[in-house]
Amino acid sequence: MAQLGTDDLQWALQRRLDDVFAKLGEKFGDLTGRVETKIRPNVSFDEVGGLQQAKAAMRGFAHALTNPELYGEWGIRPPRGILLYGPPGTGKTTLARALATEAGAIFYHLKLTNLTSKFAANTGDLLQEIFRIAMSEGRAVVFLDEADALSLEHLLPPQQAREASARLVASLCEKFDAVEPSARALVIAATSRTDALDSNLVAPGRLDHLVEVTLPDAAAQQEILELIRARTEKKAGRTLFEPIDYRRVLPVMGGMSGADASEIIRRALETKVHRVADGAAQAPVTTEDLLDAIDAYKRVRSVVEKIRYGQYL
Ligand SMILES: Nc1ncnc2c1ncn2[C@@H]1O[C@H](COP(=O)(O)OP(=O)(O)OP(=O)(O)O)[C@@H](O)[C@H]1O
Ligand SMILES: [Mg+2]
Image 1 (tube, helix red, strand yellow):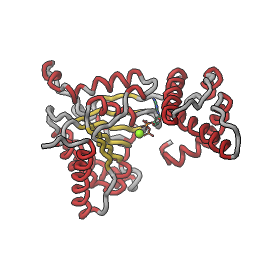
Image 2 (cartoon, helix red, strand yellow):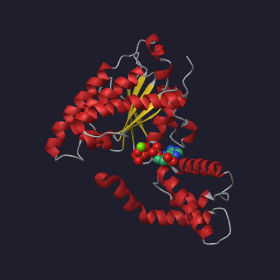
Image 3 (spheres, helix red, strand yellow):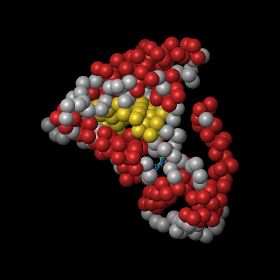
Image 4 (cartoon, helix red, strand yellow):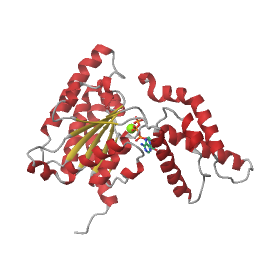
């Protein structure tokens, strides 16, 4: 039989998920597009700035997928679950993708805010189906993004949320406990709200490997800005920035995340687009331009955060 290409595999997998959705959809309503899969994720750890410890930990966990036998040789079972926790926009999703890439695993991205909004306590049924598919398709990273949404606080009044969430978490824990040591599957959950997580999820054998993803310090911010600068210049196929004077830029970026840095660069470039469209000369982004972008971003940041994270901040 001819070797199936990545596109064919991606198509076949998405079809299987769509079938599950169609079946569950009869019960709960339309579900399309709520789980994204990537057969060959292509995000590398080199794209993550700072976070030395988190990167090293995640690299280590990739062995659970590539070399699970080694754990047996040392008398332990490979990890089943990892919890990435830390402030918004610090690289949690990127790290999960990078692990899947390094391990050659299929990446199943489950956004729990979306899923629970649709299925509430029945999300457990859906997760069961997705786990079943993931276990049967070869190495898998099942990524439970926005895991705090399992609390169902965003959907139901407190008392009802507690009860429904307890049922949902119990069914999820059952799935966890049933994962065979030989499954070559890792569940990675991410949250910026550890206070909203059910402690049953972090019990031994479940999400018991905790990885903190911190806000970058100044050196890490510089590394991240350089990574984003290199990435955008590669995309554009030309130099877009003058050398950046970090002695001026970093002191005004205290407390900013990688996502903030990326937004600042995007804004500085957008200003250029507008100026050039208005007839200005094509000049690269200067340190002065970046400082202006940081200033403007600071003014709207609190509003953006409120819109993005609602009551969460
Ligand atoms: N440590 C980092 N190195 C490089 N880029 C980063 C880093 N942290 C964040 N970014 C940039 O910010 C964007 C958002 O990062 P990511 O989605 O991984 O963060 P997150 O922690 O999952 O955020 P959220 O809490 O909002 O889900 C990335 O696309 C990347 O451009
Ligand atoms: Mg994320």
